[in-house]
Amino acid sequence: MRISRLLLLLGATAGPLYVAVSVTEVFTRDGFDATRHAWSMLGNGAYGGIHSTLLVVSGLLQVCGAAGLYWVTRSRWTTVLLALYGLGMIGGGFFTADPGRGFPPGTPEEVPVSTHGILHFVFGGIGFLGLAAASVFLARRFAAEDERRLALCSWATGALLLVTFVALAATGGPAWALVAFTAAVVLVSGWLTAVFLHYRGTA
Image (cartoon, rainbow, N blue to C red; front, side, top):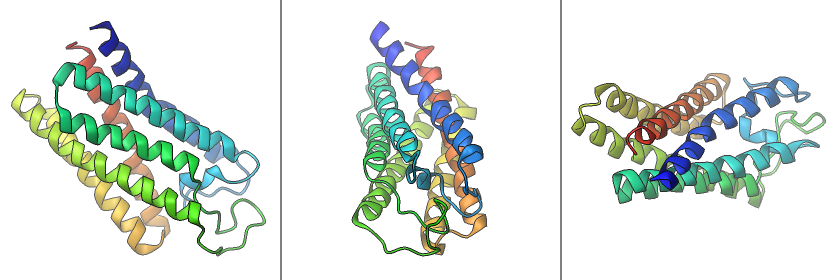
């Protein structure tokens, strides 16, 4: 089971890597305001390649974690849905979000919606829906294993991600929706790390 343990370890690094690099970018990229700009907009500008690459690498690590989870649990749907989240991140890395709201500096407040901007949103939406659905399957599995804390966290993080993503999409991105969605992404990243490490310990 060495392969499964390695794959789960790789999956466990995806969330911390994505959050740590993104937070660093937030505080170092000129003109970026976390209350006005989504993290995905960091894929624009002179250093946009950093965030785009981060999305692709993090997505690949998530897919590795999903594969490792299958080796341990043989749960096909959970594996597929978690892999879908990873593929959504990869797609989001290849198709950058549209700039706007003055970021990168010099960008108008409003810009026309582009094809790559639409595809970024589509890939992100598919990935987040897959992750929210995976949380349901994992919550049920954890409940059956009498892992009540992990079951509760699975229900809560999946619901929070879904609600905040829908709110962000429906409202056009006011400060409260951006901050809430960003917080949900951070919490979900930590939850996924806990899931992968839990099953690594049983492999």
